Amino acid sequence: MHKTILNLAWKETLQLLRDRLLLAFMVIIPVVQLGLIAEATGAGIRNIKLAVWDQDKSAFSRDLVTALKNSGDFNLMYYAQSYDEIRALVNDGKVGAAVIIPPDFSRELARTGASATLPVIIDGTNSIVASSLLGAVESAIADLTRQFVPANAIITPIDLKIEFAFNATLNIRWSTIVTQLGFITYQLVLVVAAVGFVRERELGTLEQLAVTPISRLELLLGKGLMALGIGMLNYTLLYLAIRYGFEIPMRGNLALLMALGVLFTIAEIGVGTLLSIVTHSQQQAILMVFMLAMLEVTFSGYLVPTENMPWFMQTIANFSPLQHFSAILRAVYIKGSSLEMLWHHVIPLAALTGITVGAGWYLFNRAEW
Image (cartoon, rainbow, N blue to C red; front, side):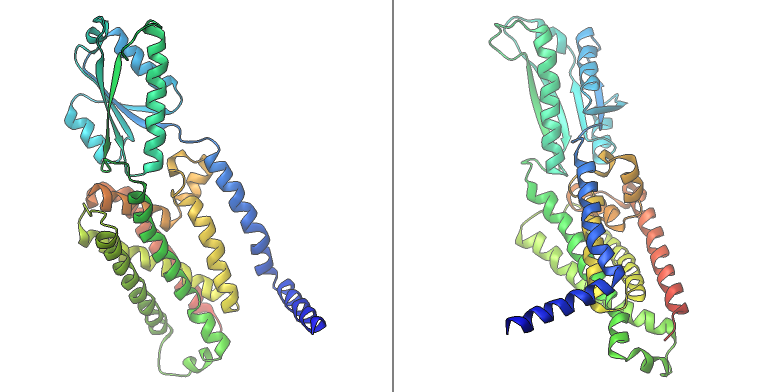
């Protein structure tokens, strides 16, 4: 009995070794993903875009701005001139944090035993990033305080007034669960689309379809429509679970969220169709989906913001539909962003949809039945 089991295991091993494509993916992809995650997370959360509204315009306020710039955690992008401009920059996602230096800020600090309030607005859409930003602001302020405040001072001279925009309690579930809406839909649609044609090939029914009065385009659209229906049903159920089960408020336009969900689903159907055409078995197709999903997690911005990745990873992430859709989900669901605020993600997502669907049709039309 033991010999039989060992012989069967050896047979399976030999069969796996013969599938060079599958074997290469099993060996290379996990190592590549480990290296990419290490590269993406090694630098921490740095170079976050910052806006400053300096109403004090004193030597101390300039020192404060310089301290934030020199901390290495921030990239000062905007000198705002009003509170409305500050709110617009945060709402549009142009900055991750904004510091408001009130009038007479330095004069308040100069008063004996007094403290001055320093309002800081931090984008709470991504709770992990927001927590890192808070630590960076506190560290920069503490360094500056040590330079100008006597060591025996009792009252902290700068009182940070932190506002976490869009997520007042910095609830980590808001950002993680909303992002899962896209990732779970991505996995399901990709699996359904990836096994569509390879299953027909394994069962021998693809040749039967070839002799029926149906064109290749009709066959491709029929398969795609089925995957789209399953994907959007899953997408809708997940949305209902997040909205009413987890009670995470939806701030954006539901029609916009659903329309962009359809666009994303079609893009992944195109990717799945490509996998279904180039693979030779359902097992190989599903494993390819699994390997691709491992890479997509790295580039999606789920762990580390895309803009904080090395330049070559940012370039690759631009070709990831999941990366663009994850950003869209957070912006629409949590921030309530409109379509006009999302063009820098919607246009690339639409382009990738056209490319994947077009490539899938091209390869399917050239494939021999």
